Length: 223
Ligand SMILES: [Zn+2]
Ligand SMILES: [Zn+2]
Image: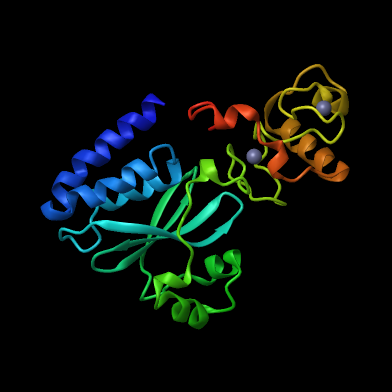
């Protein structure tokens, strides 16, 4: 929680320099909307740290261009342009202007776009994409690893349900029984366990797995 507060603080200061004075208040509204949303806060911090056109500008809204597992392709719609950011809990990458619509083939494929032309065409109007909703409120997204409904959790996600006992996968002792040893040491064990898990069949995320504490406040739900 403190970490998020510090991040909002940094963004607020960056905005003083980055956003035009008469739009500062409107710019700050997004800080309130996304106050507990790490993904959106990363976009705000990245944008105001490295203003893409090196001129005063501000983000009016954030749109969800695509999402696959915990990886988001977001458009920061500003007063001048719309900028693409690839964001996950691992970090953030700037991908240029949405209007230019340049995305490498690997990413186009990953997000399921037919080809670069259709992506570019869709990008001509940011309103073709829905507004990005804060993750904490979206029941179709795992609050910890950001897997969508029907998608497999990131290994190690505290929300993942154990297919052997129905308990919390990182909390139960099935991993020791399955590996037939008392402890897990190193990557080898982890890989072997992940294979066993895939053979058994992993339980994908669904909204009823949301821990009740996820709604009680931020800070606990993130990894
Ligand atoms: Zn998860
Ligand atoms: Zn278990």
